[in-house]
Figure 1 (cartoon, rainbow, N blue to C red):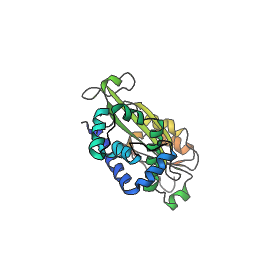
Figure 2: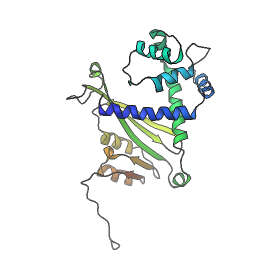
Figure 3: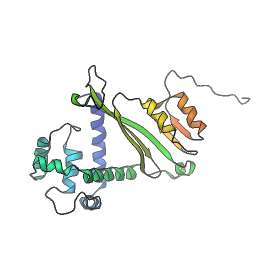
Length: 233
């Protein structure tokens, strides 16, 4: 497994631990009804689907339905056909998992009052990338070479004060963080704070953020020259 996939697995493992510690079975059932994932009593319950998607499956998007059904049976005793499981992965299930993910974020990263008083919004931009099977190369270009010819990068911008996702983009695995950051800079409003990792670093972009009367926290490249003004300017 590639280093990128190892990192992704670790991120999801940590997220799974948050799910375990913060949500009861009753809460999951209520959320499933609210999002329309469950409209009547089903063999596969909300907690079973969460277990399958978050805790039991170690392969991100590559494990077969037959294998997933076998894991579900071993863990819960529920027997479900691959077709039946495939039908569970619908728009309502996506909405259910999205709401669950959002609730974890809001509980984990509740804003600090001093920061929320200083800025109108606190925007956190980051990305994650992983390889796909080679047959998806025509849709999502990968790095090739020693890796797969197909790969995907997901860009996500999260607003810390409101707990909302501002933007999600799915792009080629070869796409540039820096270029995407410049696109997002055009949406910044005065008084907002932008938090970004080193991959988005660009002197030109930081100037544009300042021009928009917004603020930023960014790592800088090791070879960047930084000057400090004297008091006389």
